[in-house]
Image (cartoon, rainbow, N blue to C red; front, top):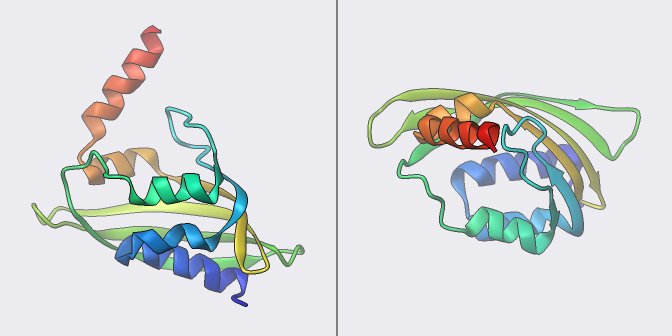
Length: 147
């Protein structure tokens, strides 16, 4: 059985390299994955099926990101199921060569080799900028603000 650190590394490397169809298999059937810093406050992903859809649905992005996790530091806690992982996705946009860095902190509970809970703190501005979605994010925030 993989350790929490090994599961985390499989996840972040898989997000970068694929295969995306296998990523949901890192999660328990019933899980809770939230993105607390996401400015549009999407609902948590609560099942392996929702995670599969999340990882494999056709993204609206028009850019291809070549990225890898860098600066990985995994902190173990007093609870052997819980880790705190600091890292960044770093790379470039394939179409333009534009470099990017997206800082992240994941707080994860991994039980019996499966992710049962994860709070993924991902820099929303850096992420939107990397994907070329900064304007659409701002438009969505303006729409919420008017609502």
